[in-house]
Image 1 (cartoon, rainbow, N blue to C red):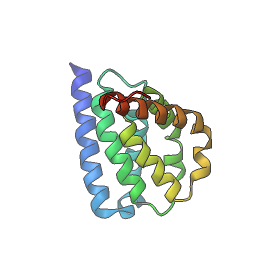
Image 2: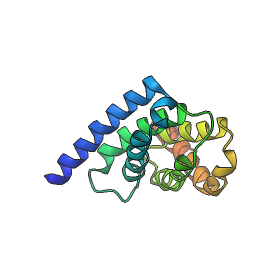
Image 3: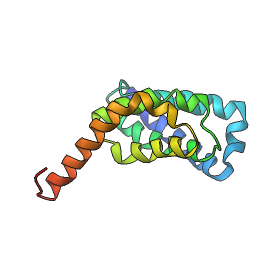
Length: 141
């Protein structure tokens, strides 16, 4: 029960931070106190090794990750450090619809070179997504 309460607390905190960052953009992240909470929280919540409540956290974490990425004109090192989590999430295959646009954001902000280690995972995830959609549509691939 304590784990579930903590997961809900983290989820609410991420929702508030997402709202704050969407409104204030990079000014919010210029504050060391806010950045000192956002990046470690993102790291924890996007880790596939997080507790069973992790799926609850992940949905909110992906929104926060997107808001943080959208607030920058370049990809900060703290967001580059999350890419191994993106690679693991791609292999898991449950959140690709949210992960692909995030990775596109890295490319648009000039950090495409950081995605090179993810090419195998990206290819696998894209193939899995195509097969999944084809199955849902009754097509054979």
